[in-house]
Length: 579
Image 1 (spheres, one colour):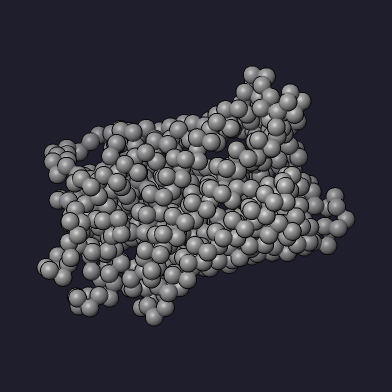
Image 2 (cartoon, rainbow, N blue to C red):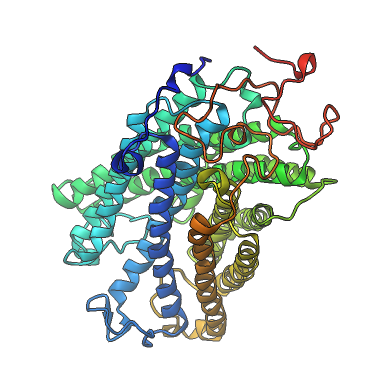
């Protein structure tokens, strides 16, 4: 471990607008840039979901206020089949690659890592700045697909070959090409960020910040960076092969030319399953910090929590085959994937039990951030329990490609990730902007989101068990689905309310930026190092690099009268400096 150069607190003269807000090398500004762009993409991704839900509830009916949208997207205010395919494809693509990942990894990773480990910035600030601009270029390329002839990608977010490999199969030409190119470019950005995160955490921790004195959110971001570093090259290679099939006449995935469609599925899910943990591990870390802070208790089983995240990341590599139970797999191989998938429930259960152990007997403060953390745990638990059904090969054969799967992934990735994101934004907003978000508006937003989220996604389990397929244009085409149509109506009404509720969050966010109550340096009385810095932190973060004397969760310690004990407070010999 090396100490960040103290001289880095150089004579920082105030940079101009362009250097401060656009081409900044300050990790905090880069984190905010990722957050701003991702919230914009959230509007697009969420809007597409509303269109999908409208079509499923009232197929072929005119969407109020959408009569102005030109063909081929809509026909006199109704959704065309081709655009419906594009809508659900791009909803998933945008939410996964341009909302959840950039906020959890790009925003929180950039903003928190140097502050929480006691460093002045990332190891490679210029590379960090480039990672944002390359990610932005990727987003522009992805949005450009909506306006090219033939429309945007429409083969699902998995883009299974040969459906996606032959333009004639979907009628999409440059839209699918841009989809591939955009994600390749995003992968380059993620590799820049991963290298930076890993190098920074290994080399720039403050004196006394041993591995097991790091906050769990830093552990989660470190493990996620390693996952990204190893998973993305596989996807990038697969996307390159897909592009060559589409544009250069090769046949990696096209059976007619001797290619193997299953090769795409293996390569995609070898990336795709670790991707699930890339999106949930930082959320686990955020929730862990919030639960300990607002329970005023040390995290229960700190080392077990860290080791379980390592275990989840490792097991995440060997379970990709459970996405392919229906694709043609030998029973022996299917059984091995089934067992390994069930085993991943062990470290996940350790985390849930430890979160409950943290809450047990705590002096719980039901702040908005804490409510979101509690929702994260409960929604992740429901999503995890439904995952057990899919891990079992015989059950998966029954529910595969039904709305049961849609319910599961949204409980894990919306219920899990987005509740943690809302909690994290609320918790670190004071440190980001020097102002507090409004707690009343925050709680109204939380309760409505929680109600409408469950009203939207829990009934999807019922649809799935009833045999309702994913990705169909009109459920009323199928007689056996007609009795389930009232459930589709109920889900869509809740989904529309869920979407409308997010305007409360948007209002609170932007109102608080300018009119929010000015924040204290440490408004939550938390222990970790980011609260040692000024609010908001200046360039360089700290007046002097702090020295760490203990772990990050020493709440209600008998050594002090307060119920928090910051990591940098020196209590003399009792502090136990590790270096």
